[in-house]
Image (tube, rainbow, N blue to C red; front, side, top):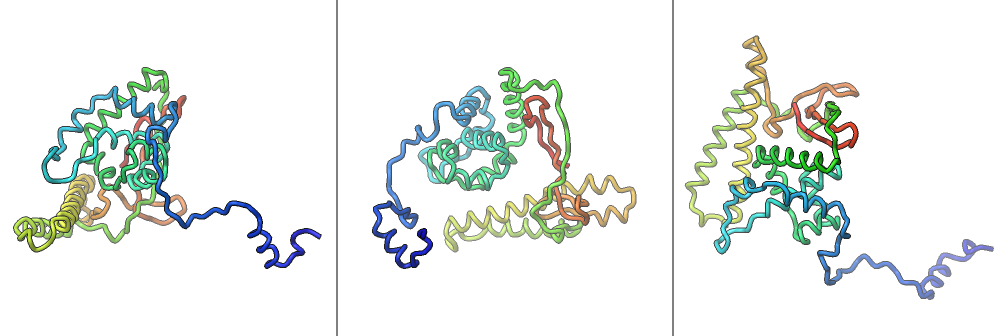
Amino acid sequence: MGDKSFPVTFRAERRRAAGWKPVNREQLLLRSVDVEKLVEEDHPVRAIWELADRADLESFYETIEAIEGEAGCSAWDPRVLIILWLYGYSRAVSSGRKIAWRCEYDIAHEWLTSLEVMNHHPLSDFPVAHEEASDELFVQVLGVLSHEGLVTLERVMHDGVKIEAWGSDKSFRCQKTLERHLESALQVVEKMEEADSEEVSERVAKARERAVRERKGLLEAALKELKPMQAAQSDPEKQLKARESTSNPEIRIMQQPGGGFAPSYNVQISTDAKAAVIMGLGGS
């Protein structure tokens, strides 16, 4: 009879007696790593790194406030952040959190950051803080791809798709409520600037200040997005009822393909028909 006829205890004893090497994942390893050899010479991430050398990145460095030799954390090299996004797009990854996660587990991302841990905040904030420069860089990248014959731009397809947002319909507020919350946020910012720095640690104070300023920025963006919505309504009553999200100013309540309504993005994608490369990405 086969091995199944043996008692479980006998099979376990026989396995322990055999000279096989077990897999032990409950351990920590200390080993040397040659970062340069993490990826092969012809890996796509190296090509994207070289591609960044052909682009004009000066405008990305002008906003860096960190100064070498003075107090404070050093800023991430904009070149690294740019290439992380470019490589992410080439792998259909467009989330700062997902890219940050890959920096810990994917060898190409580890090579890019030289094994440094990447927080998702610098990644997510970077395209927003450098919107014009990012658009210009995208044009430069398309120019290089076209010059190398990787895209033709002869036929570009444009399509839109609804993507349900990670947000609640309860986050939508009218103009009066948005203005009231913005005024409260401004008051909190003023109080934090006047507060004695010894009451809390510098790290905690910076974290609180960042959270309040992010909240203030979202409210300002919501009010900005609300204006064209109100202008599109001829009925004054409908203008007063127009609402905008306080957490994601770009989302709208949209009808879903399966029925019902939910906060969503209307993503517009332009693609090169021959190369199947995304040429443009926007939303409405």
